[in-house]
Length: 363
Image 1 (spheres, rainbow, N blue to C red):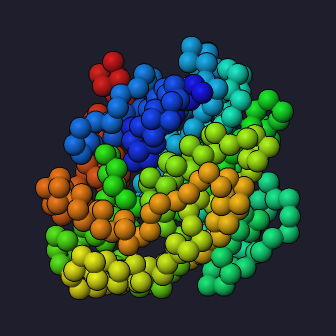
Image 2: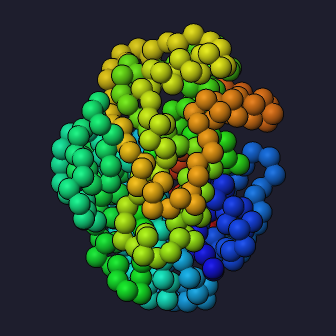
């Protein structure tokens, strides 16, 4: 298929694009380039790409590409960056997502895979899933894992935008335009455009370079975790799956066995990497507290076979950090921390307050 990947120069996109190419797909990228030069090692295989903001994409822009499918990764991520300007988060993560989907539909794309998130479950009971077809479990955190029929309870602007996007994308789904929602668990693992601000990646960095497994919360929250390569493999499997198995359906992406208390992840890092588990001053309970079931994707799309566990991922990260001669300063600096990268681009005048490149950069 001809596949357009938005955010192809991001943390997940840098892992997914080579996988799509290897599978024989004709891949095009679309990215605004905020993290383009935040590379570790040689760049991933180059693909034809459009350098533009997803807020500006039109059907005419996509007509030249003529994608059979769109994989939409581009978004402001769920760390303090998403809270930097909530209205900006809604503009990019929700309104631009729906505008892009309409443009893709008008340009003849038949499948639209949306990178959603388990963050929409949050904590506590809330509204309904627009794709709900059965009365599945609705147990909350600390009880049975939540399946795709569970109610929503987003705690951040990021989580809210994922709910709104799924709802509006469901309204666009029809016989000619098939939408699919991948509710990714919390990501970890190595990528050529590494994020040091993800919990497992951060814990390994501090253990390896500072001798402490530093928790920012009290570690009492449950969190589903999934390796970046397994997220990429899920996108590939859902892209290639028969339409009737995935049309207008949401899937929790990960493995049911890979739900962890954060304090247990910290202990795992201590055992595999070393260091002492410590708590940041004022560390308290994280309100984002949930376990999820990933049984649906395993049943509906058996081609998706996750390969990673957190334990294997911890070992991979430690080995990769050593291989690339990284330091704690590097991993906590602007190249590998999304919020710091944006702050640096803003302070240098390269982007404006809406995260758009200044004319000199865009030109």
